[in-house]
Image (cartoon, rainbow, N blue to C red; front, side):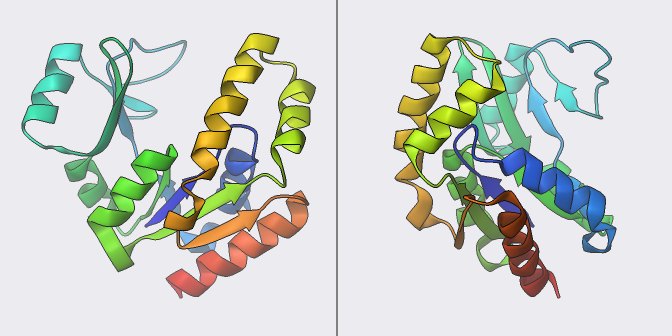
Length: 185
């Protein structure tokens, strides 16, 4: 299993998507998470997410069925079911968790040496600001919120097996590939 966490704008999704697309020999597949939000656009239950009511989600929490979960807003939950991960592993998939830092730490605690945890780190908070501003997808207020959260998330880096500093995307991709190959093979 591969756990990848990073502050927003660090390049995590770019690196993970590159690994999955360009290196099929790694047999990487995203874990399918649950959410209590409604499907958006063309999203299908069991493909992008398992869509649950807030009540059903809370019931699964009470039954300790999640590896990790978070209530992002009131009654808006996201989480990873233990049973879903086991189904994917039994199917021969190397499960990829693209999760926040707390979720990453929790999943690593649960699976120990069976999972590799990677933290993708920006070269600096100033560089992260530039990247978020360059994206053009967030308001100045949202960027400030993301940066404040990023500073907090950066404190979790020592709890991960490896930290990859993404100051050069091609180098970060190759370093990540080397680490993942060493773990899997």
